[in-house]
Image (cartoon, rainbow, N blue to C red; front, side, top):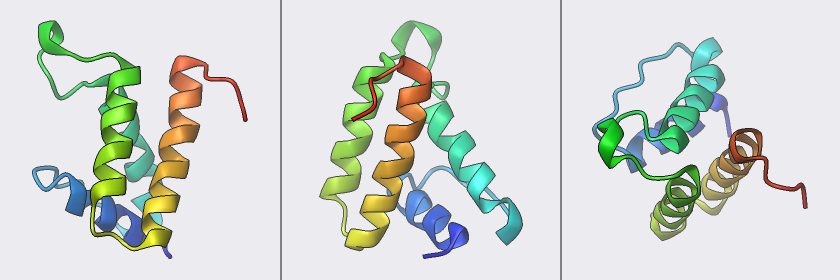
Length: 92
């Protein structure tokens, strides 16, 4: 699965996010969007959820989606990597 296809899969989960990107920028745009999601930057500061809550909600949304197993796995892998960077989760 290409980075652009993975970005399209992400877009299908969060339909209100446009995230335009060329093929060579797709991975960077996807990672930046996931980082913003985990930090809950799209929400008013007083209503923001913790990165732990955002991580759990994202995993639920991905696993409950109709995406292919490969797309789900790859998106979850990126979420785990970015969450580890943000909230210092121990490596498994």
